[in-house]
Length: 454
Ligand SMILES: Nc1nc2c(ncn2[C@@H]2O[C@H](COP(=O)(O)OP(=O)(O)O)[C@@H](O)[C@H]2O)c(=O)[nH]1
Ligand SMILES: [Mg+2]
Image 1 (tube, rainbow, N blue to C red):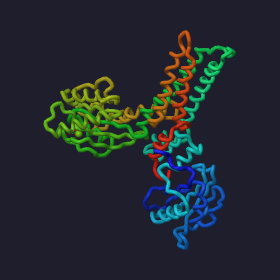
Image 2: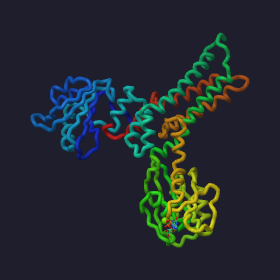
Image 3: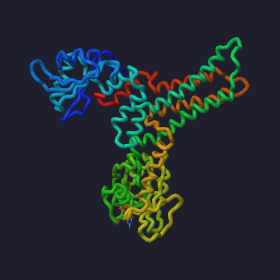
């Protein structure tokens, strides 16, 4: 998938489709002012930088709208090129007419993310920042927004640049020795060198380690509620949400299908899934199918709330639920002993929270536990959180290359050649994160997920 041409002029609606109070049509490229002049008149042909003007939009003699046009002269614009933003009335017909007029004047309809692609290619943003623009637009919670805006501002990029700078220094020291056929450069001080490489690796790992929580911050934490039938899973979901999402009844097997609901806790998006009770002896094919779906949901979970009914003795279904929750891969299991408002027939196990869906007891602690990992990411000082799988992979690759250094440098004959190769590979992974060396396929992939007009 090649990236689109970048030497022509592009046009697109920057605001969402449909009718609205206002809409913005954006033009960027060498002919942006000329194309704008074709519909806004000669005043648009040689505008002053960052000037806003109220101008008539005309299709020949016909008045289409009156719009405010803002002109930016490259390179001092978002894309780095001459750009015009036409703020017109939000009528789909007016917008379509303006787009058509611009195309007739030589502009080309922009593809997804093309404005930001140009900003990247013109050095306005690095690739990590450009990707974060997409994440910022999609941010649906306070935490996702915070992670994205920090990245747009260069939070992740500057940390990666700092690691790169350390590695460049190390590589220079190695290379000086490789080139030193006359023995003029003193031998490498191995201990210090390895220590600095290890520090750079730790820094990369630290940044990468925020990814699991970061992904949860961006996409929402998937929390699956599981347990024996009638333990109060659906009641707990309703209590957490604060409204009656799920059907609740004293009859076992009320919840058959999985059911999802979204909630924001302390600014973090949480996606709950209520599931059928894990009955050790399912009584029907329907119940068995519900249990199969519950098990599938468990495998996709970031965290599991394992609910037990504290007002009755344990049952085979409790044991089945414990086993299934434990088998749910990497998910964190939070145990809740429900119905704390009733006389207790069993004690909470280690780490098990006493809760009551009926009275709300313990729910505050349950909520806090759910987002504890996410909160830690922001608390750990570093504001930069990696939320992109591509960035995580690049950081892990760099750390992996650096991990190989000690073995190469130790021993009677340190292999400086090989060490330099590992350093170069680590540098190249970090450079690709920033887009300094990213191949076209990577760029095309990154920008294709953007909306048109961004
Ligand atoms: N006293 C009390 N009853 C509860 C509590 N949570 C659920 N129940 C009751 O337990 C029964 C089963 O609840 P439900 O949420 O449908 O359980 P599920 O099958 O695990 O989804 C219902 O009669 C609920 O009213 C609680 O905290 N206290
Ligand atoms: Mg239920």
